[in-house]
Amino acid sequence: MQLPPDNELWASFLKGDRVAFAWIYNRNIEELLRYGYRVTSNRQLIKDSIHDLFLHLWLHRENLSKTDNIRFYLFRSLRNRIIQNTDAPTVSGIDMDLLLDKVFSELPLEHAIIEQENQEDQIKVLKKAIDRLPKRQQEVIQLRYFHDFTLDEIAVVMQINNQSVRNLIHRSISQLKIFFELAGWLLLLLFNNIGKN
View 1: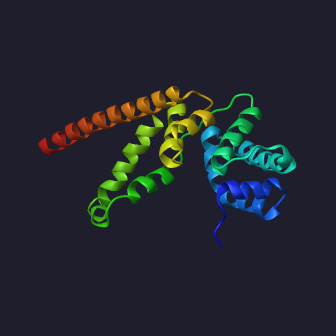
View 2 (view 1 turned 90 degrees about the vertical axis):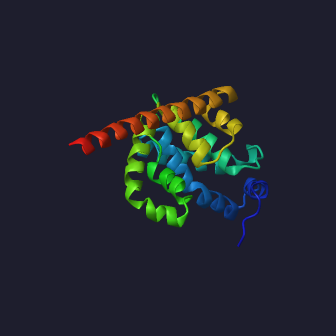
View 3 (view 1 turned 180 degrees about the vertical axis):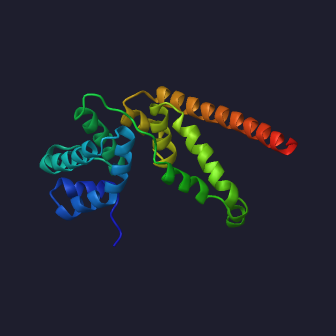
């Protein structure tokens, strides 16, 4: 069965439709858990915050505003709830396996076979590069390139202005480029030294 558009599904939920509420929960729970791990490393806090969020949604559904983007609404609400539920929120690294699956799934099959031996090295370099970014830059990369949020949506979720989002993305990409350039030069020097021995 095909789900109705977000605005219709949300409207049904606001009227007390338990099936619509279950669909909203089931369709978004995995992404909410993954995103929660970008906001804090405290797993119990994430689970409690998600539980609180959905309980709040159900109990206060008659007073909630309309939305045509449920996922965005839930991400923003979860981030706010996690921050409210902790005194010192910290942002953990992004889910590297999922990000790398997305990056490497776009390679053509022949290319993937040829590059299979190099893929593990590329994954390690990418992990190191992203892990070296400041936590807010890791979060903005996750939201933009993994969850495909717009700049305006990221600004609302992260509670910063649109220009700050652009700046974070630009700095992140610039730092990743620098890291890859340095890594490339180091690998070239390493291979040259190996060849001389």
